Image 1: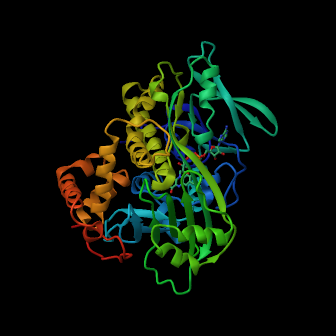
Image 2: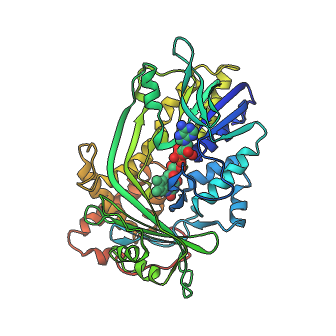
Image 3: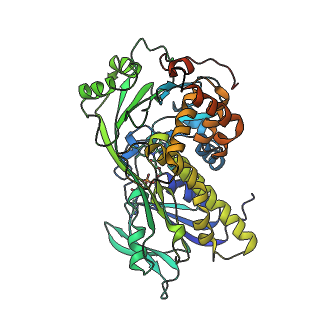
Length: 473
Ligand SMILES: Cc1cc2nc3c(=O)[nH]c(=O)nc-3n(C[C@H](O)[C@H](O)[C@H](O)COP(=O)(O)OP(=O)(O)OC[C@H]3O[C@@H](n4cnc5c(N)ncnc54)[C@H](O)[C@@H]3O)c2cc1C
């Protein structure tokens, strides 16, 4: 879609992390001026910062997110690769044990970005602040919304900085301030009430650190993932090759079973993963610094789209609206897809109502759930297999869990089934990809066979597979 040009005055974005940066990039095509407000001081380089405590932990970028970033920053991936990031094949270069089976390794053609979160965000930040009409005001915290006297339209934000408080007027305010967004309180104070909130509690913690790979590591994989088989196991491990020839190692556990932050205990935690491979690799790696922990209590979706009344001129996206259990690496991609939707809404609105913004944010609010439903489903339906997970369970969930388990087992030796599952995981295709007959029939047949044949005869439960270099069958 062609961008209709800068038709509006000033937009303000709250939060300078991935959702905020991508929003600012998109708005820069439509507004004369975009002010990006970030509470943290601007980082000097790709280093962790207080406002993004998850930044030291493994972050992969799914293909849907890669596509959005590539669209808005065409030179980004080449520069990231020059700095040591890798675009790997999401099946061929990843050894992934999940639900007691190894996934097949073949060239899927679906890339996955591997680098530290700080390197990615830093490169995006540099590009956004280089735009002539974007101004980053770091060290500024947004404390509330400004409205017109009838409180029907948001007209800006109230800012706090070391210099004091000040108002900042805007035609559009985008809240991308993450899980800690105070929009529910702000809306309530304005008389709109709070959004309904859906939560699936997991009490998960990530513990991560950088390591030097063992001297004898032969590069058998770029990422090694060992995920649990709910409901009986709940520890995961992830080793990703990141820039600087290092490994970023993350261990996590659900329901209070959290990995320790001292190296010996961390290694012991890895010993109890479902397969011994992870521990064997980690045992010979050398820690390069301290381990850090970050807790994720729940998946949370704030249903702004269900609010009967909502002020004009306010849009929300990213974790501020929907924050997932991060084990499937969806958050940044979903933030990107949200920013892309904002761009589309602005373009479409320009055709319908040239020169005015009335109704644009409303349309965006109603359409955003179309992006959120699939990743929410992927994340929560797997979490709800644990009886300890809190949250609403829909009728028929047991059947769904049976199907998911058989699907994941079947992926082990059926690259065609795996290819469809992988497309869904990367948010390239919806649920239909794993329910279509070419997938569901083999999965159901597999389900029947498991009643008579041991799983190890139907799927690879034991050996870490090597990359076969074949295409999906
Ligand atoms: C442990 C962990 C691992 C993850 N792994 C992955 C992964 O592998 N892949 C993936 O895609 N995603 C992953 N995610 C999710 C990902 O980090 C987020 O979805 C992504 O950062 C988008 O978030 P956001 O920009 O909406 O919010 P955040 O990243 O939380 O950023 C919010 C920003 O707003 C600023 N801010 C907050 N309040 C104010 C205010 N009042 N005024 C001004 N500024 C404010 C903060 O300082 C911060 O910079 C992971 C998350 C966690 C917790």
